[in-house]
Image (cartoon, rainbow, N blue to C red):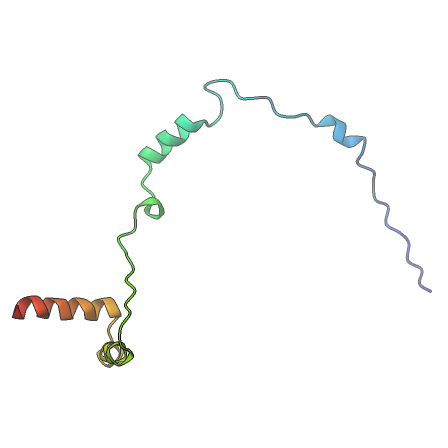
Amino acid sequence: MSNREALAIPSFEDDLDDFAPRSAPTPGQGRGADARRTVDAVSQFPSREASQDAQLNLKGPKHVLDRFRAMCKADRRTYYDMLEILMDEFDRVK
């Protein structure tokens, strides 16, 4: 057998009586909803701005989508970039 001794763990039952629930803040004290709105209106965090990105899900014949993916890969372009090139060319020819 080993010579290990049990750890002396203090009892916290009596110590917790010192804690009391917080009282409700009086008007003008702390950060209320009005203060939060004021700070939000003044601060311009990029993470809070609306994103300009959107998403498009295409469903079509596999050979057409494979051809589009191959075009993008061959020209080393993102899907949205190639789509914009194709739309611009369509408008030019139209």
